[in-house]
Each structure stands twice: as C-alpha cells, then as structure tokens.
Length: 158
Length: 361
Image (cartoon, rainbow over all chains, first blue to last red; front, side, top):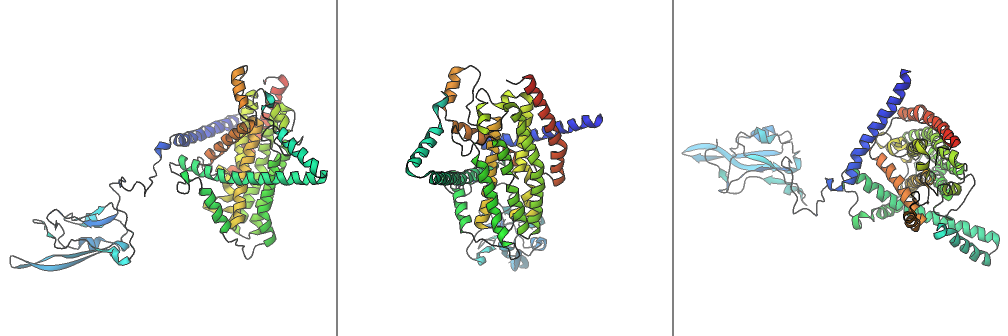
C-alpha cells in the first residue's frame, strides 16, 4: 500500500518540480527586458565596466606627475609569471645615494590578470584598471612602461 | 459558414486543368511531383524558421540576445548557416561503410516526408487522407530511427554507435506512449482517419471535451513525443557533453544539414499530430452558442489556426528543452516503463468508461 502511495507521491513531486522550473524560464521568456547580454560595439560609448573587473595593471599618478612606487620589487616577486620587471636607479638625496624607480616594465601579453601584485605593493602604488580593449597589431606594443616620463616619487612615501 | 475556406476547390481545379491536358497516368505523376516539391519547399521554410525560432527562444529563456547580426534582428542568420553548410566539404570517415553512411540521411528525410504527407493542413489541403491516418503516421514516423541506427553503425565511431543505440531504445519505448495516448482520443472519435477526427471536433476540441483523461493523454503525448523526436530533456542520442554529437558525429556539410533538418521536420510533424488530435487541427476555436464570437473565429483561415496551434505545441517543446536537464538512460527507461505506460493504459480504460457513459461533451 505504501509503495502505491509513494508511486503517486513521486509523480506529483516530479511534476511539481518540473512546473517550478518551467515557471522560472517562463518568467525569463515573458520578461525580455531582463536580458543581461550587452550589445558591445554599439554601446561602446555608454558601456560601464564592473568595478571588480581586472583589465590591466596601471601605476597611479597624481596631477603633479608623481607616483607612489618606491621600486621595492615586491610586485615583481609576487607575480607568478614574470609579467612585471622593475628597473631601479640610484638618486642623490641630501648627498646620499637612494634607490628609486627607473622604469616599471609591464608585459601585458604575459599577464593573467590574477591581481597578486596589487596586495603585494606596500605603498599602494599600482591598481587594476578595468579597461579591456587591449588588441594591437604588434606584439611589442604589449610591453608597456607604466611610469610616465619625468615622473618621480611622491613626497613622504617610503 | 463551414465552406468559407475550402482548399479542395483549388486542388480540384488543378486536377481538372491537368486532366484536360494529360493522360490519367501522367496526371498522377505530375500531381505527385507537385506535392513532393510543395513538401520540399515546406521543409526548407520550416528548417529556416524553426532553427531561428529555437535559437531566439533559447536565448530569451537564458537571458541572452540570440542571433542579432545577420539581417534585421538576425532573421537571415539561418540563411547564412545554410550557405555555410552547403559550401562545407562532405568528409567521409575512412573506415566507414560508405553506402550506408550516405544512405542514412536520406532514410531519415524519407521518413519525415512520408509522415507529413498524411497531415491535414486545412480543409481539403491534405496529400493523403487514409482511413487509417493515425496508424500510418505512427508507423511511418518511427521509421526515422532506422536512419539513425544506420548512421550510428556505419560511421564506425563509438560515440555514434552509442548514440544510435540509445536512440533506438528510446524510440522503441516511447513509441508505445505516443500511440497509446493518441488511441485514448481515438476511443472518442471512433475513427483513425485524420479528417474525420478533425470533423468530430467542430463543436469543441477533444482536450476540452474529453475531461481529465484527455488532459492526461495530452501531457503524456507531450512527454513521449518530445522523447520520440530526440529533443529536449531526452536528447541522449546526441548528448553533446558525453557523445560530442551522437549519431551524426561523423557527418558534415549537407548530410549533417539533412539530420538537422529532419530533427526540426519531425518536431513539426509530431506537433502537428498533437494539434490535430488534441487541439482540433484547423478547426477554429468556438465557445458554445456565442454566434458572433464563433463567426469571427470562422473568419480566420483554417491554415492560420493550424499553424498557430502547431507553433504553440512547438513552443511548449522548446520551453521544455531549454528548462529541463537531460535524463540518464536508466531514468529515461524508468520514466517510460514504470510511469508513462501504466498510467497510459489506465487512462485508456478511464477514457473508455467516459465514452461508454457518455460523460464527454
């Protein structure tokens, strides 16, 4: 007797779950406004990328062309695939030779956008930008120098 | 009012025109060729429209856009796909049985052609009006599985063979449920002839007149026919994640297009049978004695009614396909032999009781 009851219970439970699924997809079908796909090249002017999207590493500069990178190479060590190369120079400050950033080389073609360099930076000099149109015609253009020409270390950053 | 749109006038006039000019044998041959060409054009249009509809419906259900680039709203997308498929190289597997490999797509298409011949599209617009119409359609539509088995066997590919065998098991099982659910309505009509079945629904469709047993039969028909066309949650024969493409893994170009077209043609045929038996075929929707309403409904051509009903059924099948996850082979057979078949047999008894006691309208 119990098995017969269970048999019909199974059917009703199964039908019920199927109807639940149909309701969800039916809702989507009758509400085409909820479509989340974006028409990319058309909406290029109005497209807002998401805050957490990781597009490329940028070195932040302020309006005086100053950055916060001390050239400590922590990001270079943190990077799992050798994307970042820090080249340092010695500068004279008050007669002392001090290590400072010369070129911040960033190989975009090797970057996996893992973002491990960002928390590794002790001075919060770099961050992940959410740009994404990186296509170029020549591979050499993917090797970028992130510090702008003539830029120097921001005062008070050690 | 009944003869507002009668296609037999048109077909009769064509027949008379031909008879005046040619011998009876030539007339028969010309008419057969004309009907064949008409169905070929119908299949081509069906393929174009249904593939587009499938892609759009699936896209909206999954909150996507679907094809948008080729033509306005992507309407020419399937045309572009057809051109691509026609231009592709027909690759034949080196170890394949070449004769059967080339034969298989044609067998599937022939089965689809034979089945569609018996479908009544409108009053007088029916190629063959057998007095065993339903039996014929059931018999012929299951011939397609021979093509699938041949394709799987001759490809000399494990995926193909597994897919074909699954398809065979599936169709043999679900054929029963399709036939029995249609028989449930035949109990009421007392005739296997499709045109008579439609005439018997002039005062109301069987799904309304037949009460609960008709609804159960309709539900079972929907499930079983989805399985019979290898679609939706029952697409084990071409389970992409397990068998790459199942029985048509080795096919390319135009021969692949034949399998693809046959799938959609079979879907149309199955939906048309469902619409004919349960939803009144080309009969307009009537409510009791509302004469004005009924007259307006009569004014809509029967072919439109037929196509609307069929597209409703097709939409249901697409909705199923893009909602439910695929069944395992044991679940598939359990569903048929443990649930659908016993319920179906009981349902026929119930329907016989309803018909005997005259409880239907």
